[in-house]
Length: 105
Image 1 (cartoon, helix red, strand yellow):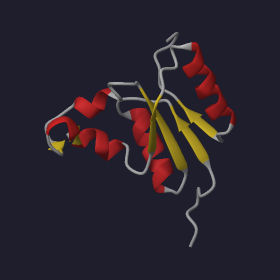
Image 2 (tube, rainbow, N blue to C red; image 1 turned 120 degrees about the horizontal axis):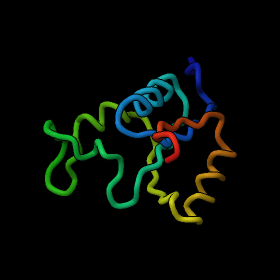
Image 3 (cartoon, rainbow, N blue to C red; image 1 turned 180 degrees about the vertical axis):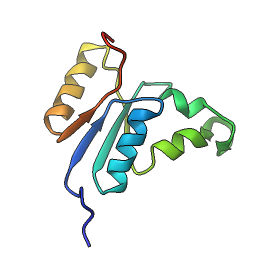
Image 4 (cartoon, rainbow, N blue to C red; image 1 turned 90 degrees about the horizontal axis):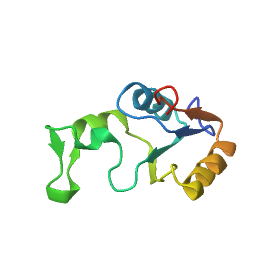
């Protein structure tokens, strides 16, 4: 049986809870979700523990894992021109773009 959203690509530019939870539900329904995170730090919630999964440098907050399962992740600095160009290309090749930035950000 095919998942309802199989073949749909989602570009996830969201962070913290509402956006990641939305795109997690889309991934659960079979969409390919590509989450863009900040190079070096990732999504803020990677560091919101305890509880933690893993040890040392490899540990990730369970909060992050619970809101981002089933996604692919890429680190792109879209504040830089080359990163912004890459995100635009990904958006052109996506069916859905989800973001939850503050107005004007």
